[in-house]
Image 1: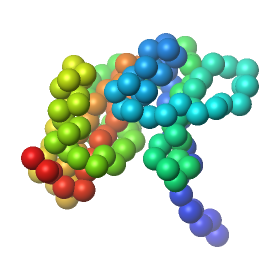
Image 2: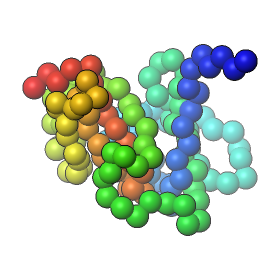
Image 3: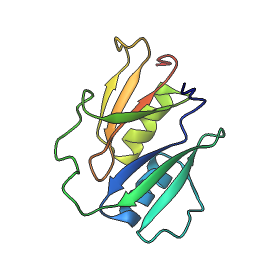
Length: 129
């Protein structure tokens, strides 16, 4: 039987590594961590303090999204400490988003796109508006 203890990492495809690294470092505020010397370009980031990671992989294939923000499309979510502060930060950074303070999910959600149109959900425990 499989017993999952945690999610270790999520990998995302990107086309411009430096642009993607800047987004995840400067907008999402993740810390870049050491990455093994694979034979293809990419970057790793720490997510929180429990060992979870985000891996960026440079890929020039046809499996990248073309559409806009669509919460029913494949995405992953980061939990943020403040809904209000996250909205203010995204506004300061000029990032387009879809905010849902009264989401049917039972917690507030914000959807954004990274530079390669990967969908990211930012959610909080409550809407501290």
